[in-house]
Image 1 (cartoon, rainbow, N blue to C red):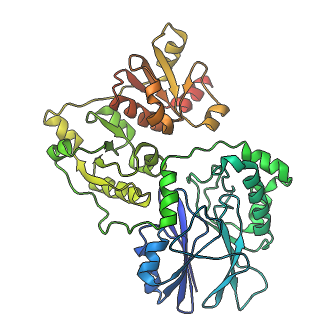
Image 2: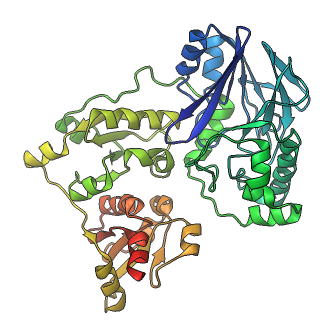
Image 3: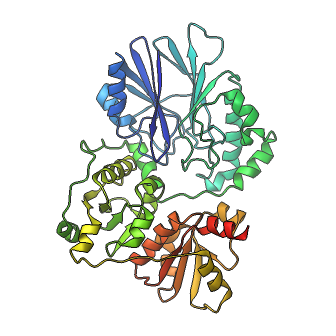
Length: 450
């Protein structure tokens, strides 16, 4: 038997290859899905089933592509807010054999209406479930978000409460296999650990400690979540079936001249924030490669073209992988060599970094034309904020930057300075000449108060 977790970095997406008796199933495959076939063939397994726990909001499903490649049937839950054209509908009580293993379907709505969990049984030891693929209903240390139906928010929160009890009824012995781990936008309190059991979660998961249904609903309704615009693209593609990933996931190399003439909608500098702040090409914004999965969908629209600027080919390749998985892959090419560009006399821009003393002086002095702009999320700001600061979440800048005054000075802050540099880069690229970044941001502010 084989049960292998396949993690997608950045998105913290977890998919699974499960095999027995020459057959294999894949649960929640990603778009670049050759990896499942390679691993299955290496074990002498043929992929016969593809199980989707729900219509994902944060990545393109590879189910349709993998089905075309293998002939496997795709199973998806009912009530998907549209027709999942590449899948068969499966419902509570259905079961599927894969060699010695049996997958039993549980309808577990709440995160989405179409959500399913798949309880895994060993038919040689059939008394209780060995494990359960919980999708985005139950995570290690958290449960799924319920904000995708704002007009029915209490209803869906109640459905999730009921679904979690159904999963717990499988027994404490069942190992849980969620669709996401820590760092995913699908939950906010996940543990770094990616292994757990129903029993451990029942005793330790803070959300499962809320035993009263109405109290659970109140808690979920009170959560703050953000929905980047690309979620709508994911919703559509995961009904229609996404196209295959590009065969070569490496951007075309660009010269400096080609970069300047390519006409891309966005020049995205994927270097680290301090490197970008020290010197960057005019008009470029900063999205460090590790932040692309969480933030690219806020700044890049469907179909918009992108040119990447990096410090190495490896950075370019990793960035392209991230973009392919969220279908924002209209990448015209990549350029490596900001320092050589500066040495060749290319005009460069920079963003200053300021310290706590400077921020304090500006807050207490007469700086009527200056604003300390906090770009953290609402929960972070509710927990601790600097008096006198204003707030715009970093992801909302592409819509709200025009509410700001280019003639004012802005110091951008977040928790450490990473997101603040992204925000400052956006303003810098859109005509704001007097911006800087509070280096260390809230972390430095708290340290100075102690």
